[in-house]
Image 1 (cartoon, one colour):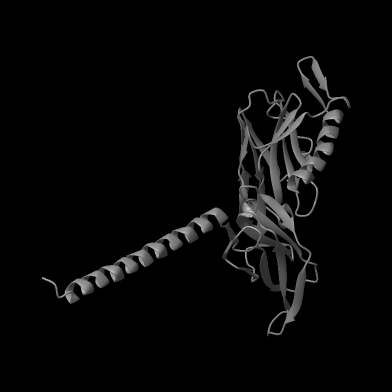
Image 2 (cartoon, rainbow, N blue to C red):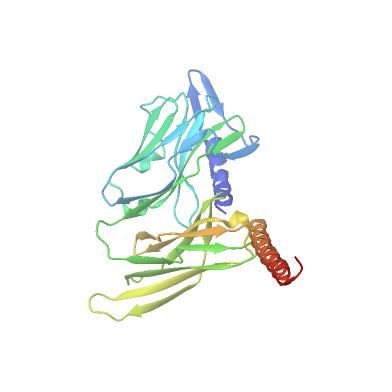
Length: 308
């Protein structure tokens, strides 16, 4: 789903190409509508900070991005708010003057770039709650665009009392089975609807959305609060579903993350092999008992035989 969303953002990416003119000496390079992408590649030559990074309001943060492709000519950063579309943050040409201020960053004075050979770092100063989003670093050459895996920046207020409980902590399931993840959030009631996303970290990372929730007021002294429970059910599981699942809830301008649920998929062939091993051991024991019984009978017969 995340890749599909990014592909939607590429339309904007291409339209930006068509509107911009990059000048180097007397050469003006203009991308026309005939330009098309032959491939969109994740990661590869683009290496950026990944996973989830939590910061507090007012802090400064730098998102690192390295690229190895010497053929790359254009470099960009995209910001994708939770549940929203990717938005272009910065875009520059390899031979642009390093002192040139990016057109898009002029609208966001708290954002700046560190541009060097093989480096395109994004620096955010005085981080705000609105900066919570997934950030993608990209580069392009010829008809190919390469993107990093993305980093989710979680911005929190310096003091908050929200509690999030995720269950189960770990579960082992055989192929074809099912599991229900649960995420309970205890938070203040700010009058805003909560948004929940389920992230999976594993061999095939992805983002899963769920709409199911059950919120109820909490009767306790102090400011009004509520408890909301979100569930995600997965059926007919297979080996590709293995990984760690996290719930992320946007509540009252903050992002709350669960501790994660590790889903372990067992191999049926391994289970069958274990069963066969147990059966073989039982057969060996049974054969041994039978031999002991026969040996006892033989010894008894010999002792009972009166012949010299």
